[in-house]
Length: 330
Ligand code: NDP
Image (cartoon, rainbow, N blue to C red; front, side, top):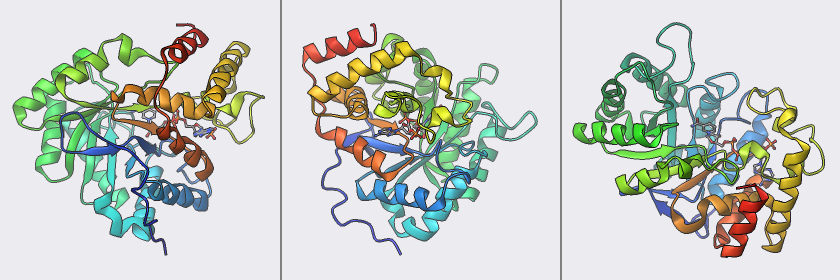
């Protein structure tokens, strides 16, 4: 029987999500990888427990997380039953629909048909009556945005979601989504873009500016570039790493000599700050308080502990920022 740590709220900073009433932990946990049946259930349970004990109140999912698709939601459903049921009101659980989930024309993208059926399936797998945040996982160029946003609004009206978000939407798509949702009376809570020291698109493409203007929150996914921005690959490719697995999203080709050279420079900058490379990468995305939360993955409780410690050192000197930009060839 799990009892949450009594001091779980002592250290984690919580940040307001845009202009909403909802605060999120500076670090949130994603279940995209490491929560399928190919991973030991004990490790999964240990990661979730450690996360909550460290003040991570937000678990992020999507219909298709696993592998196979759906299995991460089922795993969370088991954990909710065994460990977290009585802490439900202390948790922010999100899910998404938009990527391929089931065969045929309704198993992906952004139709009302697809989004609302998918949400029902997700709730079933997690054994929940509602999620805290329901996302459109990607912009659908063929479905009227009014329909996609209308489906998110309906999810809230039906009591199946408390807030709504968009992910992988550009600045312009986000502005439109916020406008449509605003007219419906369901504010856009948050955007979930990819953002890291190596992937600056949310800054370069005007998304961060748009979110500031709109008062919409932001949660960065893959802030560690799936593990590349950590010490994992400094001396080769560990057997138990994502790059060595059969993940279609990261393989050993990504670990080039040139990249490792850059990582070594970043690792030196991190060491001078008394941080691990992973901590540097997380502090960097959280610097200045602009982002609501950094959404990390973890394959062990130890990684999570290392990552969470980043929240104690979020200030950078101008010189450090310049050295980081030079290291990643900005
Ligand atoms: P990260 O960039 O945080 O990479 C996580 C991986 O980095 C871990 O699996 C582990 O790799 C390694 N790692 C984590 N912490 C440490 C540490 N302290 N020291 C050393 N290595 C570490 O994120 P993900 O790519 O996993 O994405 C995070 C979440 O973002 C997802 O779970 C999901 O919720 C969300 N996401 C959303 C997307 C969207 O389209 N909206 C797309 C992708 C992700 P290893 O497993 O090799 O040990």
